[in-house]
View (tube, helix red, strand yellow):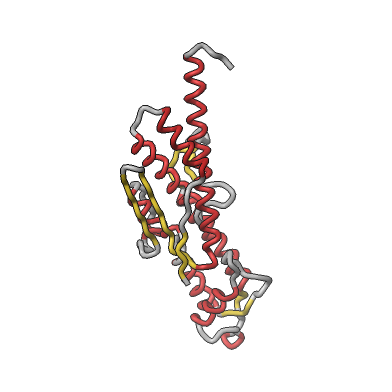
Length: 236
């Protein structure tokens, strides 16, 4: 079952955006475009398999964030998690007849059904399976990597963010983007068509992405205020 997940910015986000426009020298549209792009970049940096407790951003030699998304780190983390889960789910059957499954597809169907909403095996199954059945499950799951992140494909394309092939291969079927400009403002709606049990997770990710960008704007505004105060002769 597919669920359409949308999210909107908080009042704090929009107040920060208004302050950025008021204190900057660029046009309102440039500032809005840059910060909505930042939200999408944040979304991609924390959408599984990227993310976790902290966004996956590339770092320079000084350990500072460059703004680029570290897709490779997310992919590796996802592959490692899949392998741990496969090892937890199955044990290699010593004989063909001792397998718990009649076919490779049966093994995959069981595995998919045995996972919880976090796509992890519940309990300690260790079901007996032939090596070819285990390998079939592993390959099938690895091929699915990047499908959730692909839900932001259209937004990424709009903002010129290049996605790696392992995400791009899933296409844009799960992604929608609506951009509206009018005399009242600039509106962007990014929609990720995801499975029902993932919808809450996507909503949380959306809010986190907005919060990260809000904090980025607040730091820039604070820097501007300090610069203006120093120019006027005030010191901290």
